[in-house]
Image 1: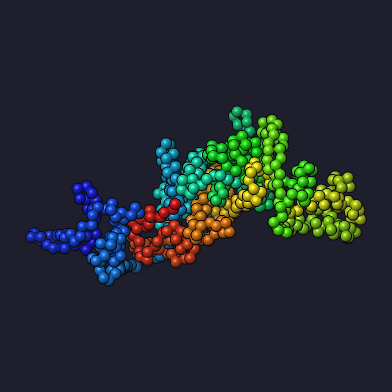
Image 2: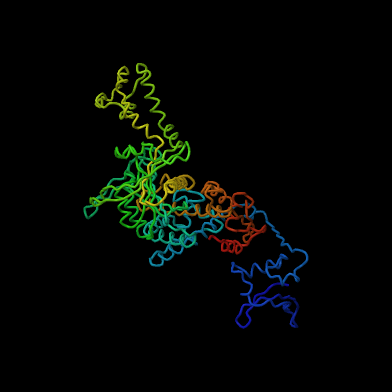
Length: 606
């Protein structure tokens, strides 16, 4: 007996039939069917999941039918399928070889985010003949599962159980980078729209920070004069490397939502100061994409009133930290004055005030703004600053206590010169200073002025009615963006770069961004699977990026005989966590090629 789906007056109908084989009068083999039970129209039973009829048939064979009416007709003994393989010497299947299958989960995420459809759509408007989508997918898979150069990523095509692209012309992968760069805005817009629809992204808070990536070259790019006489700055420039590498770098600004999922990126020449990146990055990536009101959150390296005016003119808000040492004397006095502080413990106190100030916008016009200044003192932050400054404090202490036995080199003088009276420093020669005169050189007032602000932090905001603690909490979430940088530079190996053209550099970082979004979605699903994101739980609770990547690498299949495949490492704890988070069930059996495709289709992402 078996379940059959047939059309009854055009309506797909299910029934249980029994087949009998026989021989006709002319000796030909015949099969006749006898209807045992008519179940009714398919639409009455279909659960909306892929391959319902196929799953129904298999459930009947397994003795656990999806339709209860079939239960009396099931065999009392569970019928188990048997597999038999016969290999002859010389058969290539005698050698076992595993191929990646985990890319199917990555691809389902890309499909649900609308990226694949966007690329196919814009390709259809062009005359491109090569497989743009296949090469794009190969770039994203490789960035997550096995980061490498573009040429090496193309060579990974055969690492998957079905090759991703059929072409053997490697250089189309660079053409794909051109395509990705040309359609960056459309890709970012579709990503944001889908994330709003599928994950409820509100874009009520957008965080921004800047990092940089280095290149394995000693030569920065030269500026180029364009035909119209303008100058295009070389993108790879010497600048202040976050990793202290003395190599050309490129600056990258990253936008992130309040759930820790990236929004967009923008790149700048490596010698661009952090605060000079913001207005351009906002204009190109956020102003036309996020039209609703949001709070822009950034640190003191970003804080400038050009950006604040840019935001206010567009009805946006802001929360930014502000340098205390660069503040006016009146502001410093208010910070240090003990009056007005709310003391929550010996380790923490805060206060705020609303101020009006005159600032200059990007056009050079003077304007008055009203903002709230929140300042707090934290023992934890105090200890951190003491630890970070212990070296120079210890040096000054030793100099004062034993001036005759302490020599200061030219390089050390340069490091400490702001704490010495300038008229006694030999800036011409950089020679070592006579240690017998060092006691009078130290400017104790400058040292005290610097140290007395240890533990204090200042935040300014447009949100006058927001509570002080909420302002502080929302600002502190900015630290999560550092995790995005860590993942891009760590698991995704975003640097060093193996491309040098500016368009290719930005396309490479966009690939990294998309790969990062995939990782963050997996982490978010794990959080949901484990009970939701409560305030006291880590934002990447469950699995960090390294464990996710390692688990995905283990999800492989082995071709047994050309049609049957065996899965590997399904019992790996981390892989099981990922599969459970996406409600993916892997039955203990061998899979046909059709089974593998059906399994991918059954993965529910959102």
